Amino acid sequence: MAQVILIESNKTMNDLLSVNLTTYLGVDLIHRKNATEATNLLAILPSIDLIICNANVEGEESANVINEYLIENHLEISLIVLGGNVKKPTEHTISIPSDKDWEKVVQTSAQVLGINEDVLAKKAIPDYVAVPVRYFLNLDTSNCDVFIRIKKSPTEYQYVKRIHNGDAFSKESIVRYGEQGLEFFYVPKEHHKNFAIFLSNRLVEKMDSPNLDETQKILLMGESYDIATKEIITLGFNSETIQLTDTIIENMVKNFEKSPEMSGLLHKVINSKTGSLYQRSHMTSVVACEVIKNLKLGDQSANEKIAFAAFFHDIMLTEREDLSKINSFEELEKAQLSEADWDLVFNHANEASQLIKNHPEAPVGADEIIRHHHGAFNGKGFSNAIEKLPDLSKIFIISHHFVLELIKFKETGGEPKPVTEELFRRYPSPDVAIIIKALERTLKKKK
Ligand SMILES: [Fe+2]
Ligand SMILES: [Fe+2]
Image (cartoon, rainbow, N blue to C red):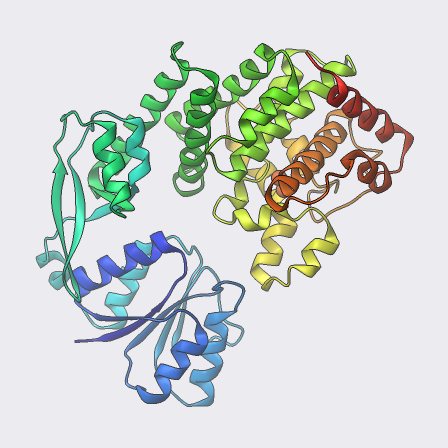
């Protein structure tokens, strides 16, 4: 049995690779957390057949460290690098540019280990895709069979059907699975796309339902946001993800227009059980729209543009929520990130603005706001010299900054300090001062 070391910190990817490498290729899979653990193992077990390693694991250039070790110790072990490459590629290194392409990893591993496709085909075990249990809280039936995964032996998993196609199930039953520590259900791979469509449609229907109170609606929007952004990053835009994002954005705008005062709405969002990327998006949209209203600058289309930009501005950081708090060059340097993470943060505004050009219904100018959201005209890095940017971009930057500080305060506590003072200091131009003063006015305004 071939021995394979796997170093991958993304849990979903690790799960997918584990199950497929063991069931399809029948390898003996050894998990290691980082390069040090892997090289320690290699020191006592140099007969490993293959190493699969993400280029960057939690800030460490893991694949590179391992490659250096292999070269130094003259070990001829194949190394598959996910999401990048090593600095000194050899005939034993294979780079797979996308670190989500698990199918390619399985295929390449088969080639490296000399397992031919006939063997693969004979193992007619169905393929499953992991779906977080909490997604099912929004459903009461499923359009395909749903399984749970059970470990049969150290290298084998078994799938047990828990929900039949078309069966009704209660929310309580799903909650119970969650309480028992189950994180994922599994749906057969060939049904995954249809399931995603089914789920998107259900979320859209629910969001449009008039029976929800505001708290429930915010919760649902938050969950839909998580689902939509993850689907867009892995599957790209399709008619369902587009419809889902449109509904969320439309609701963000409606929600704002309906609300008599901003602070109440912000309060509800910040205290809702939703992810922090979603909270920041929704709150930025609310604050920016309020400032626009206060300055009598915009109309309905400005609100839509802002809500759209708020939704997508940090989409490149969907899997890296921790990095989305960085809001200055100093913070970026202080974070001591790996080269890849540093690049990701540095370029995320520009990349997000490129990405939404593929969205057929993006409001004109939303990409510009996204590109400018950290102050840099070209969407690369950070800048405080924002006075030359268009008004909507300036308003977005100020609102986004304000919201970041608000959430930071909620998370870390301490003495409440007037955030606007910091804003005046950081963006010291008269044009920007007008916007910050408008923000102050909206903060003082009560019902
Ligand atoms: Fe952000
Ligand atoms: Fe950002």
